[in-house]
Length: 227
Image (tube, rainbow, N blue to C red):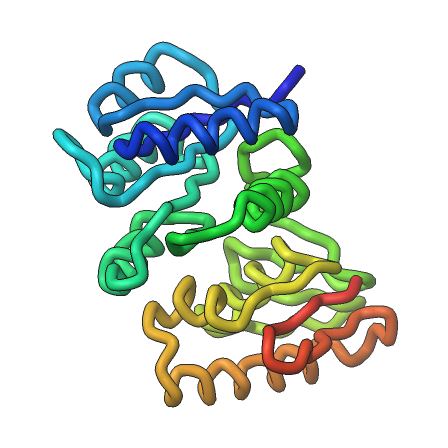
């Protein structure tokens, strides 16, 4: 069964173009021109992913995302934003956005981001929220913020746990540096970037007992967890 996508975009020309493109890629995409119409349909239907323009009439994308999260906390959400909407992007991550894409963008970039979300959610569109995850020979307990290896138990800080969870959700693929910073630190300024480098170093140290597990630097782009 094709994945069902909500597309909320009040620019009818852009919205129709995106809907037709995604339909050609076998995504069952429904276009809405306002936030309120999305909410009415979402309450009555089943969807796998939401693509929401931030600036919409009646109900903007941020308010809509919060309302959707109250109905289905786990559904992935991608925001469409203008370049001058940095504060909205930060607020979007606070509401639990999975990704954002800045206008203007290519159709291929949007498709890549959608496919990446479905890969890390197992194709269901709903995030897997198991409390225990295997990272090589390690067991990662997200709820208790523990990393277990044989008889060894490592207590993680909140930031370490959040960063490891983000790396795990993107395992074996690129985790973009700015995306990680905005997701966890909210602001991707120089000092937060340096802080994240410190946490990456700590995680490498914690995971060193299993040589099959590596956190690679992808120069100028981000990190890749191999496991």
